[in-house]
Image 1 (tube, rainbow, N blue to C red):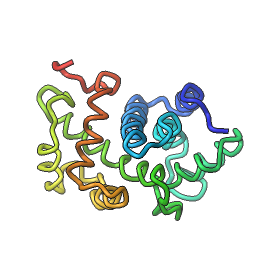
Image 2 (cartoon, one colour):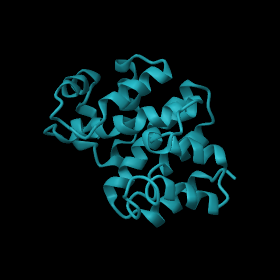
Image 3 (cartoon, one colour):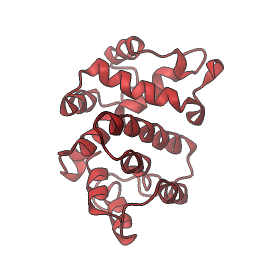
Image 4 (tube, helix red, strand yellow):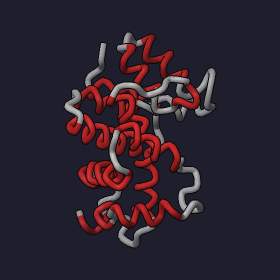
Length: 193
């Protein structure tokens, strides 16, 4: 079974209380919708993968066996969720799971996950705290500063864009535009909303 967006939202909120983790899920969901459209994927299915990819992280933050994302896969299997969805979620962290992204859906979740965090960080250092004041150039400028959002795995973002067959600047633009579309939900609409 592939859950509906409503069912995935319920599970996310059952396991996650931290508003920033929920906002991250919403950002990834928006980016996944954008890529579903580009690759003629099932937008609702792709969105669900984005929404639930980290759903259990708050409860099981230890990375690896017994924690994230393995505990999430265990929970999803117990709920009878589709193995293709579980595999796609595993592909957001191939270094942990060994699940190398193969399909466009799997490549997209890998490609957008880290990038949404970097784009959020760029918006938060703007005086307006607004995604509407962020552009590709400003993200690329911060990208070069390795001390900025130091935890953001730039190599993973570059590899993700390459896997999708999209130039890095274009990839940033796709994810940024998707996030700007839900800036209010992300608390990043600033004064431009």
